Length: 286
Picture 1 (cartoon, one colour):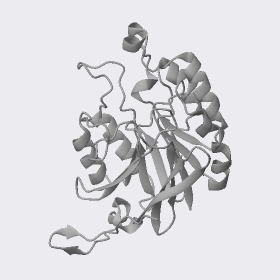
Picture 2 (cartoon, helix red, strand yellow):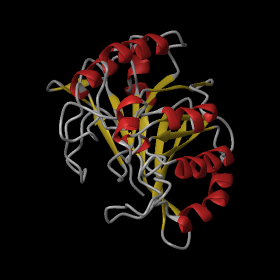
Picture 3 (tube, one colour):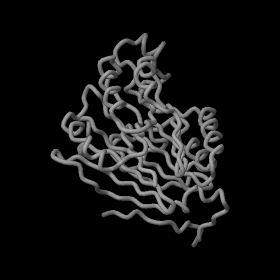
């Protein structure tokens, strides 16, 4: 079994100090094999925030797979934002990122969907470079077909209805279709500061879109939270772990038979269908 911790939007500078102070004991109980961070490790992209973020990330047990978010570019200093938007991120965070994680159950890669500036008013909108995405898919397909493929990004490729933010990621729908057709199984993201799991079939195969909550004070009426993801021979289980102000509690569990995802279709597995619809496992909440 592989145990994955999925964080996003820590936003050092406006981090939730109480939630972070009580996190270590919870992480020790969950015994992670790898930690994934889906961007926005800082609030304004300052050196002080990156120093604090790097110290926290370095303290996490095991390997880390990390991607940048739109807040990880300099908020102040337009020239730096234009000419070297991710230089500070590269200095402080890249050395802590293994880049690619693989074990007997999973393969995890990252892709940067954030930009310093864009030819639009809202620079926070995500962008999917399709050529870069195709290269990630090719990388995935060098691994054993039975391993679940996870792509770590900051922006959801498609925002679900329950998201408090409703924006459009450039090339998001096409990117999600390419991932499904390319046998990617899971897209991990952040940005919206609320957890969700959405089952999608944008192409010929099903994949999961999974978002983490935030451990910052920018919670949008939700408790601080992160995800615990477990993968074994039979299924993938996603559990939201939320901080109540006193302790971390596990809740909102989602289970999916891994044979219903893209990886197993590479071996010719065919689902039962009725009236043109796939009969798939449903979320289990407890």
